[in-house]
Amino acid sequence: MRLFQCLALCFLSFALSALDAHADKRVALVIGNGAYRNVPTLPNPTNDAADVGAALKRAGFDPLVATDLDQAAMQEAVLRFARDARGADVALFYYSGHALQFAGVNYLVPVDAVVRDEVDLRRLVRADEILADLQQAKNLRILVLDACRDNPFADELRRNVGQGRGVAVARGLAKMESPDGTIISYATQAGRTADDGDGRNSPYTSAFLEHIRDRDNINTVFQTISAGVYQRTKGTQVPELSLSFFGEYYLNGKPETAALAPSAPQADPCADAADHWRSAEALGRLAAFKDHLVRFPACAFADLAKTRIAALAKSADDDKRTTAFDGTWIGKETCESKPPFPEGYYQYALRIKDGVLHSVFGEEGKRGSSVFDGRIEADGSASITVKGLFAENDPLRRPAGSPYQYKVVLALKEASGAGVRTETPRPCRMELSKLAPQSPDANPPHADSKRATKRDDKTAVIPPEQREGGKARQTGGGLSCSMMRSKCAVNCVDISGNPNCASTACPRLEAECMSSGCWRGRGFSGCGLAKR
Image (tube, rainbow, N blue to C red; front, side, top):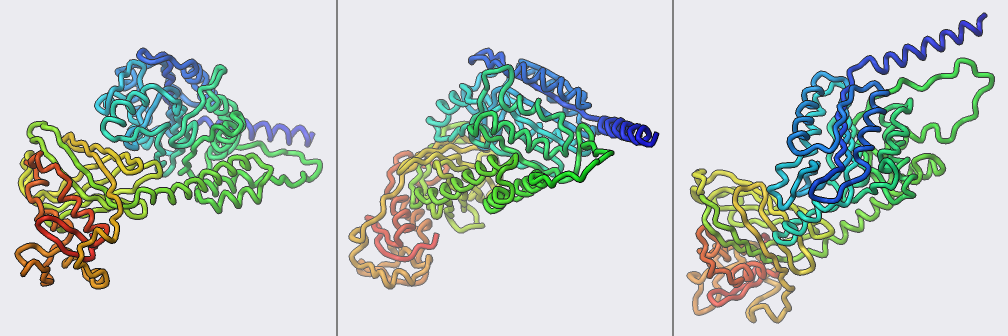
């Protein structure tokens, strides 16, 4: 009789836990785009969407499943999901199909899309906007992107924009940081492509379907999915997982606890592996993954830890390789006429040191000044932020002294490169060339290297009016390298710049000044230590 009562209580407890697991409001939007009209079709996304929708319904979600959506239908589905996410306890977005990244932003591609250049990207759905919609859910938000396939849209964009305007269109998707209470799961690591698979579902969706009904904490479920993809693809595909949900949440109820234990179970050497792996993922450091591998060498996440260790070690090597672009670069920028902006020509001497581009033109914080800042990646790509203050009223009638900001997306290779302005209405392209290091013989014969190393930026250049008998007279009122350049050709870097000023004489003088402290030209000669 006692045994019967015990079993009855266990059954009741199980039923209540299952009821609690599905008592909250769970909404989901599942999109599978495969029947593309302008590029070859994808075989799996429609199957992926149908199967994921059914699995989520069994897990207590109210899923909206949509396949092969054109631009209008995709926008409508996303808007409906944004409304459904309001007040939901859990919101999940699952996408299978083509996607691409441009300038660090991820875009999901409708089936009727034509992507010729960056303007066409406005017709696509931005993943960061969907991530913002998810934040309306109360407890848990999940974004799943099984969308890192090699695709012709990215190739076309790379051909039309990447080569012609110096914009690096990277492979795969860019990593997005997950806000608090959010899980972001990618089919593969940032910047890499995923396998479409040769079965009914992609490798990622297959692992998702296998484990989404697991009775584990939600973080553990997605970690297990990632490990499953790694095992299915024999290590060729490693999912990216960004976890910012640190509570406990069970989609299918907590694991059952045995009511009758005839004997004490033996200690499981992998019992703490999932919790330790979650901590290692949160830290994201090489030492944390190495520690996990030492503690749990034969457990579920051991192979994934090896991959993370290899990736982080490679990243460290990449950091070292970024110094390959160190030096002084001359940038020649051409801005097309686009009313109210006139045609313009600009030249810059840009300095890269330790893989970071930082150059100041004019006196920082004063009218007419500008500052270029950004990190150069190992492959030579970069997104450079340009901030400054207008010297005079600009064509958009913003008063002198008003701040402005835009970005220049660069692609460098060996000693040359190209770039294009973004986040600005003015279309401008840039060509770059690396200045070869000067030999000691290139310095002016009267240069005193010992004295030069002690001078500051204010005495780097002496203008002609301060010269006596052809010799430089140090007065303490000299010019910085960038100010020397403006004296050299005041009209060459101007909103109404003359295209005939496109010779590199002035920026080369500035570049030589920046790299060696010495400069020499027809109108000037001198030597000093350049700080800029």
